[in-house]
Image 1 (tube, rainbow, N blue to C red):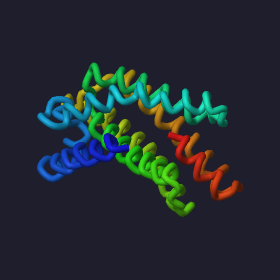
Image 2: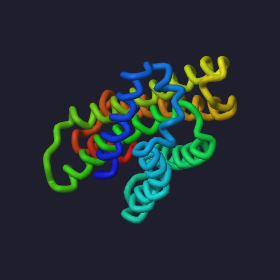
Image 3: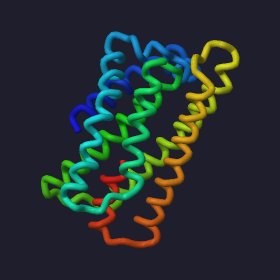
Image 4: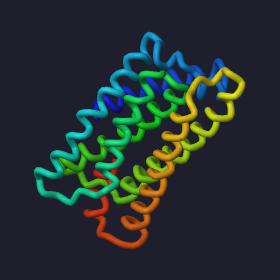
Length: 201
């Protein structure tokens, strides 16, 4: 939780700096995120963190709790894609990492509050899932922009990387929308809905 919060602040601050000084296009195409004096640490930490995050899945199995497809599919594919992309330092990484840090900061803070016995409103669980959905939409937008701007040679990436990123984010969007519908619209108690939200990412 603490790492996600600090990571969200540090990467978010860097992304705001790029947006303010160089504009939106540069924030998408920027590769200095991987080598900046502060951002490079948080980029590396992000990639490494995807391995221990799989521990969530192990604990769920050991506790004999229900393991939904979205949970393990998301963790495994994010790990594989993050490691795959980091080695090439492709464009769009700054947005992908910052958005994920932010979503995890909210999610794990919520989880910690529940574990401490704090009664958190159902609306906050819905907000977290909505944030995750927005992350997937933005992931698709950034992937599309990298593809278009790659043509002028200033947005470094590979076609296969963009394809995998787009398929990954599209599948996440479908699964998170389905999760939102099944959990908050179709039915389910407040308590069970809150618990399932935390296990979805």
